[in-house]
Every structure is written in C-alpha cells, then in structure tokens.
Image (cartoon, rainbow, N blue to C red):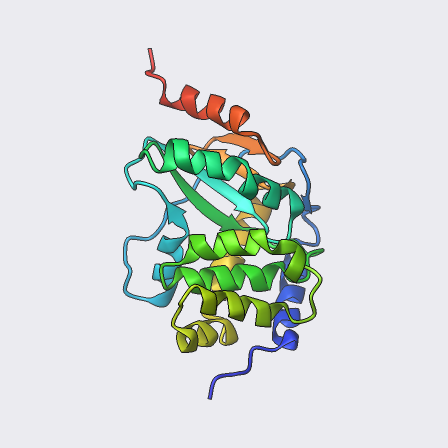
Length: 228
C-alpha cells in the first residue's frame, strides 16, 4: 500500500530543503546573483523521472534561444511573472519556435508549501501536464499558500486536469520526483542565485526578478540578431 500523502511527509521534505538552502541567503525578491551555466533535459523518456524532466521544457528543441526560469511556486514575484510576462513570451516567442523555456525549481525555505507545489507540478509533468499544473498553481497561489490542506488542493487540481490519479498520488506520496527538485535546488544554490524568479538566457545572460516583457524581449532580440 502506498504511503498516505500527509502534511508531515511534506514538512519533513521542506525541512530538508530549508537545511540545504539556509546558507544561501536566497529569497523571493529581485536580488542580484552571479551567472551560472545552463542545463539540458535528458533524451530518454523511459522512466517517470525522465518524463517529468522532459515535460517541464516548453518550445522547440531546436529553438535558437534557451531561457531557463528559476522559480518558486509560492513566490509572489514568480506569480507576477507567470501572470504577465510569461503569457506574452509564450505567444511571441515560444509558440513561434524562437525560444525554449525550461523551468527550474527553487523552493525557498521560508515558503512552507513551495516544495509540495513543485512536487505536484513534476508529478503532473510525468503525465505531460507540467504547464497546465504550472498555470493552475500560480493562478491559485493565494488560495493554497496558507492553506493547511495544500496537498489536498493539489490533488484536486490534478483531478481537474484529468490526470491518472492513482499514478499521481503514487508519485507524490512516494517521492518519485524528489531527486529532480533537490537537484534543481542544489544547482541554483550552488550557482549563487540570490532570489526568485531568475532567468538565464542561452547559458550566460542572467536576468533577476519579475522582468517585464519589454526587458525580456530586448534580450531575446539581441540574442536572435545576426552576429557580425
């Protein structure tokens, strides 16, 4: 029998993330940070972690610009980006094949439910529904952010998205994607990321905070411009 998806289970994992990130000084803000290197999604899709990993990338694999978003589902600045700039980015650049967006999890220690939200998104990702869950989590952030039954709410969102619920519950209850989220957090902390959201364009250009579409557009167009 699968382990029940309880608040204690989430609090234990959240505590582990808090210990990992305690010395990083990271916050949901718009602070500066040094520039890390970009990453890539795995090619194989024969396991749940591989499917979850691949599902959090959006856009053509051969897009000339890769944008890595380092985010926290409980961060209000991240929600602001998701509700404004992301929608314009998706329409103008991702759907037109110019940008590939990859979401990296950085659940901060002062956000008690951020890890569980990341877990819900990645378990949805294993079923090809990362981005619908991403949209739902940010749209309802103020509902679940302080709710004692956040895990139950995530379960309801999964049901609304028509996920295979036994598979989703097994994924969340048994930490099937924990290594992916932990790996993301370790990379972000190790790179010195000082706040969420943060963005890395083509592996080198770092943008901090809930950047506007105009700011992001200027950087993307510069990256797309023919080199002399």
